[in-house]
Image 1: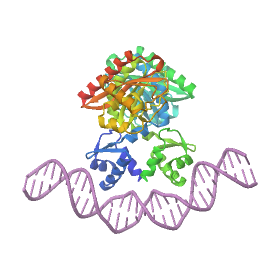
Image 2: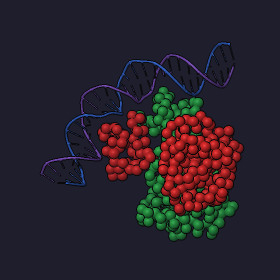
Image 3: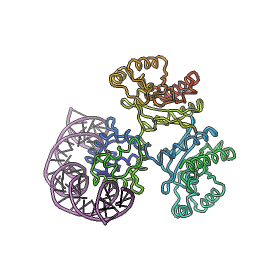
Length: 240
Length: 240
DNA sequence: CACGTTGTTCCGCGTCACGGAACAAAGTTT
DNA sequence: AAACTTTGTTCCGTGACGCGGAACAACGTG
């Protein structure tokens, strides 16, 4: 029963949009009657909300999700540096961690000019075609790199790197320079520069700046990104 | 069974901290064997995580919680204005909505100097002793005000207003000026100024700036808060 | 070594989840 | 307006499986 309830809730990912009962039934593969009963229970618990005949994720989930410790602590520690980075660049700033072979975004900060990006807080994208992902991958050990390279490389745009050798070279450059670059691999017209965050000898996160291709100037962005990443690393080292 | 699982998950609120099996059992009132079995299921689903003998909330909850539509949309729309406000004041900035007789915080932005505040993203506080809460309460209709005033007023510090008449007058002033003030009512040594956000004729949120009492200067903060709140209201009106 | 505490496993009982099927409600087509 | 499609809701007999007391194991402590 828990499994079925989880299936229903997770069927809202990644769109999150409101669904009708029959959509949920189709989407989960569960009989209508079953979804109906479970959805009613979930509404009662505040995990789903219902307006008219549509279901959406409920407020209780937001509250619980905000309490997840590892995410909370890291975000809290990183926020000031993300602010610095935003203020220095006035561009869209990301904070992400690795989860398996994906990057999960913990924070995303932007101004009035909102880029059209596939990244969402709480959402995951392939490690291989995002700036944050490449920064994480480059510093997460050779085994993981080989694991990732041994499989077909996913792509988000026609510019996404799908050639393992090209990616291997890019990662090598990243390891040397401490910076990962990404040009239109995650979204058309958007470039990105990212840097890893270390704590206790391992790579715990990465942060990045995403910029419209037109005004992408690595020489100006690189120091800011590097500074923010190092600053956060230092705080994490000290604070625990 | 869903109820029991929900009880377990919600027992992590508000501390979120890691709990041992027996703590969970005590905290939820459920038999140890039951908690053991359910916790194992929840771990399998990714809703809980387990390190050693300790349980904490799991990554899946963070992902799901980040998708909750109403919260997501409002946060996204508000973020640029919160950034403006932060940049203008360089102080801790809040975004909150009303939920029953509480304020729930959707976002909280700060720099390196982190104030010691009771507010947490996803957490809730009484409407009556926070800046955001008072701004929401003042513009949420007379019925709600009377409802709140008819009960004993909760307090977070010795400075929290507990006299219904004083609060009623403060709310009246807020309605006239469009700004809510709060001095050491939520945390000692911290003052706050807040403004409501309107959309479609109703109050949908409020935002605030929290400042160490020593450098609290309403004359400088008020225009910034008002500007941000009005800007957000305008965007929400236009965009839907 | 005895003892309290906490985590884990077992298993018989009985409950409650299950979902097909019938029904109701709301649109859509002819 | 009637026939039809689709979607939401209710019912209920069956039986799977959740339940939790109790016994056991694994530590840590005095």
